[in-house]
Image 1 (cartoon, rainbow, N blue to C red):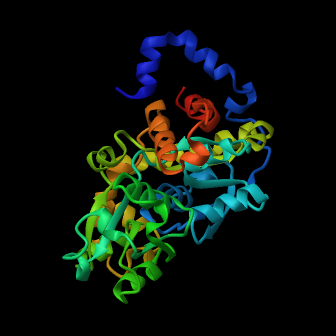
Image 2: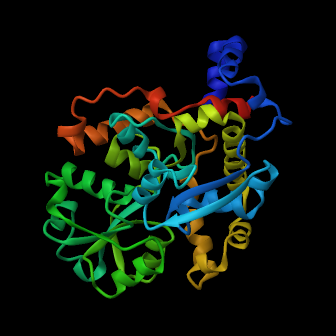
Image 3: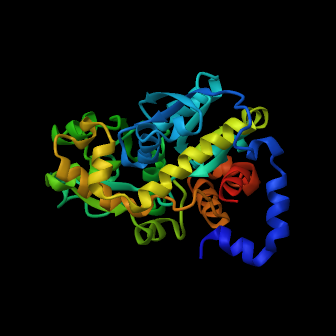
Length: 346
C-alpha cells in the first residue's frame, strides 16, 4: 500500500482535507495564475540517471504542460547547485536530500517538496587493476577516489562508508571528476583508485570491465546494508520563502515532476532512450537501456519522503559529522514540505 493510501485509510478523509487546507486555495486551482512562470533550475550532473526525472520532465514537455518555462543550469556537482540556490542565482534545485538537513541545521530554511529517488543509486567501486589489493572499503585508506564533486552526495556516501569501516572521512583523498565522460576517462586513465559515482558512469565502467563494485545502493538491499534503512536521494528543493511567496508555481513544479515519476514507472527502456539527448547514451544505446533498467528501482513511485528515510539520513550525518550533528535537533517537517505532493494526489 502506498503511503498516501495508508494515511487516507488510517486518518480518514477529514485529516486529508485538513492537510490540503494548509495550502492557499488558489494553489490547488488549475486555472490559478502562476506567480513566476519562468524559472531557473540548478542541478549537478544532469546526464546522470540520478537526475533522469528532470530530463524526462524537460524533454517530454511536462514543465510546459504546467505552464512553466524552465532554464536548467548544470553545475559540476550537487554542492555547487546548492550554493547557487543560497546565492539566489537559481530558483529551484534537483539535488540530494541531505542538503536540506544540513542547511536547516545551519539556520537556512531550505526544504524538499518532492522526492525523486528513494535509494541513493551510488556505487563505490575500485579499478579492476587494484581489485586484488582493495577488497573492502577499509582497503581504500590513503588512496584517491573520484566523486562528482567534493561536498556532493557521492562524496558524502563514500565518507560515510569509510566511517562505518572504522576509518576517518579524510582517510581518502576526494577528487572531483564531474558527472559524465570526464568521470569515465579519469578511471580509464588510472588517475584514481576508484570512484563513488552514479549511473550511467558506473554501468559504463562495469560493462567495460574497468571497475569492481564494493558497495551498490542502486537497490533496496544494498541501501539497507549500508544505511540500515531507506535513504532518500535526489529531491526537488527550494528556499522556504520562495515556496511561501510562490505556492502556485511550487505546485506546478511538483506536478511536473510527479508526471515524470509516473511516466518512468511504466516506460520501456526504448522510450527512455528516445527521450534523452543522444549524448547521454555514451555512444551505446543498448548500454544506456541496460543502465536504466538497473536504475529504475531507485525512482520514487509517489514523490513522498518517509520519516524512516529522514531518520536514516539524520543518523548518517550524526555518524559522519558528530562534532556538527551529534546533538542536532532537526524536525522532519523542516526538511520535507509534503503539502504539494499531497495536493497533487488529491
